[in-house]
Structures are given as C-alpha cells and as structure tokens.
Image 1 (cartoon, helix red, strand yellow):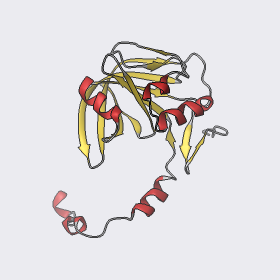
Image 2: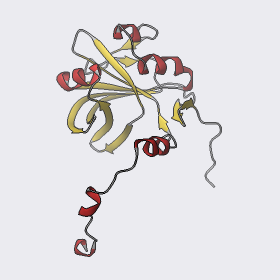
Image 3: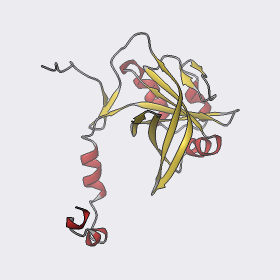
Image 4: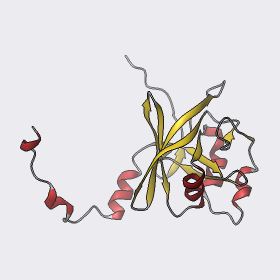
Length: 181
C-alpha cells in the first residue's frame, strides 16, 4: 500500500505557502481561547493561546503550542508543569492581558483569582475548565514547542457560560448551537 504512494520528496524543495496566505487561511480556523500558565515555584508566568487541543483520553493528554521566545516557554520547560485554563466569553479582558506585552508579567495575574491543584501551576478559579498537567513530552518545531501535558487534575465550572473563541482576528463566541437532527 505504501509503495503505491507517489514520492513527495520534490515538494520539500518547492516554494512554500507565503506567510500572508498562511495567516489569512489560519484566521478562518476558529480556536478556543485559553491561558497557559506555569511557575518555577516562585514566579507565575502565562500566555494566551489558541493552539491547544486534546490528544488522548486514555491516558489523559492535552497538547499546547508555545512560542520558544516567550518567558513562559522557559518556565514550562524547566519546571515541567503547566495548567491550561479555558476562558469564557466574559473573560475577554483577561485574554487580552495575557496576550499582551507587559513590563511586569506578574501584573497579568492581579485582575483574577488563582489557585493551585496538584502541580502548583496557577489555575484560574473562574475558568470554564482547567487542566493541571506535568509535561510528558516536548517537541521543538521551528519557532514553537509542541508540549504534551499529562493531565493530573481537571476542573470544570459549575455553570457553563459561552466559551471565548478567536476567529478572523477577533474574539467571538457561539451565537446559537446547531441542533443535531
């Protein structure tokens, strides 16, 4: 079966998609907005991320892509712990705070309430859902690291407001659920 596949080696040297085309296409991919956090035991760090997805239920694993140049990556890589906090539509301001550049990254944590579960990584008290993880594996690919978290604890909000989403360069949310029929 594999022998029947055409050789694709020539495509590796052909021109790649332009950055502009890539960005325009990716703007159409809707993503859940999360805050990925970690700590070295003294200082919390965090970033807003949409490149997060489930990997497996058994064993429970989640995947997040984190920029190598950010201070959060270094702390996650060294401490081997992270929490992924899923935001609701009411938490747009918090997503902006963690998505921006601040002279003092600690200021990012002040507008909200935080707790810890098992690993010590900061967990947002009002998150729609939170996944407390130890780093299982990391793979560096160009400008980012693909980080696989082994989920040690999960927390789900008692109420379920609309999730915060990112699409076409803007924050948004679900307008109305589509009924499966």
